[in-house]
Length: 355
Ligand code: CUA
Image (cartoon, rainbow, N blue to C red; front, side, top):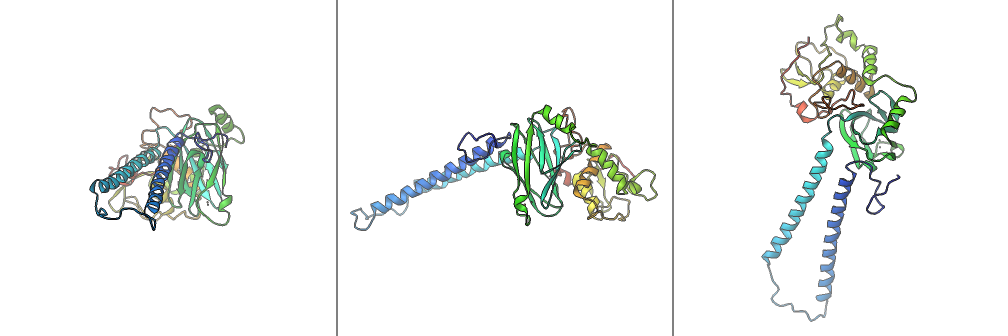
């Protein structure tokens, strides 16, 4: 809102580290399109004039083939396509690769608002406060239908999908307020679903975190929910029902009843709560009831944070594998990894056997 693009003032402000890269590709594509449009129009006009009816143009011996010309009009567009592909791929992989030690913010889309939770546990509605110059990872899901999380100034746009965690990251470069939209039609008030991203200097952000009613961290809140929902009744140490212990399982391999292995990542934990019959731990009976419809996505995320806080391998996922080692991030507590492909491969050996 407050910063202008260095090009023409038709683009949103550039307020994140990848904004310039995305804009560069955008302008390159526009330049290529314009160039070829002009070439085609010039050819049309030239030939229309030269060969108009009644013109004394030489129409004899029209060439039927021209090898150099044909090679050129094949090779040049092919080369351009490779350049566009390569350029886009570089930006795509950069966006997909969450830097180590990124702070993790939870986003839950719901008809028709965005619920956001800071690592400190503080909730926001249709607002996100972030510090400037700190990589921020978003772990996003939807409570109901498809939404799309869109911050034009950050050139960030990602589908938010029910039943799945999507992850994206950004690093804000300029303090200020920026628009947040939902960019996927999601019902009557889709157009009203949006808000503000507030980028602050680190000190201001810290002050903001401490202002208002200070809440418990997500992991502490998750522990409380773990008891409230009765999870501890079965998964606790002294429970009468024999259910797998959950302490320290995060990021570790889990042997399943069908003989396969999975990693205890976000995706696995979430599915175990909502779809408990899907992946049953080896040696246990599929007796756990589903919490679908009883536990909100936001509560599930906090319970995952709690389970993570009890230890574990830290996860094999992008964000959390090495992220917590040697990379001090003041906000990085309880970062929950996104379920990247490696955690789904199921090839890891089980370790840290629990009952
Ligand atoms: Cu949510 Cu449109």
